[in-house]
Image 1 (cartoon, rainbow, N blue to C red):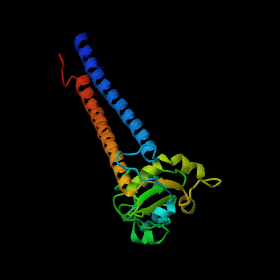
Image 2: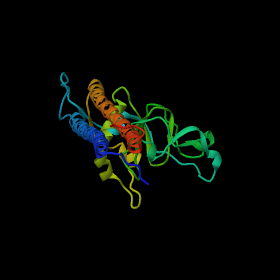
Image 3: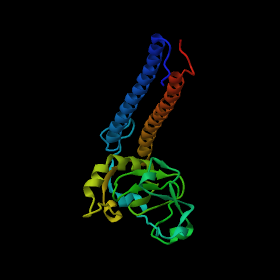
Image 4: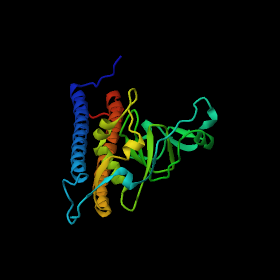
Length: 250
């Protein structure tokens, strides 16, 4: 049996209410897509020097990544047959964990597990970049973190490089990373090859300004995405109440 509103007018009112919510959700989705597109364009212009910020006139320098990196190395994986290597206090990044800011990981290592393999514990603030299999996923560690193989940790020279600027640079240059990948079965961009990449580097002050602009765009997009999720959740509650008669419109 299906419970129906007693009048057609009430059915129409319910349908109209739900259509209004759907229209709002769709408008948020269009706005999010537009903001993402605007940010993509801004990154391509600001990270290549095609568009300069007011007040900055110094030429950008052509450097290799090795010139602005203090440390870089691949990760490692302990033997999965040894249970004592896992479920400890050390965050251990796999590809699914990489996002803009990395605060937690689905898997963790013990100190024994970390020491049993080539993984290194990277301090908070390190750049985390996938260089094998799924290439080009990038984020910044907000807590001390180790990584599996195929995921590099990078510490930049902060006297000339803003870590977030490099993060955005990798996002823009993902296709370049993929084109340089080597290997017959699993494609990789190993650290010795990665550090030979060229990039045009603005003065640190200009990097900071560019990062501030892009970070504000990210925050605006995130706020809209959270609102989108919230409205979709509210819609589910409204549907349940309206379609079961818990709330009546007429």
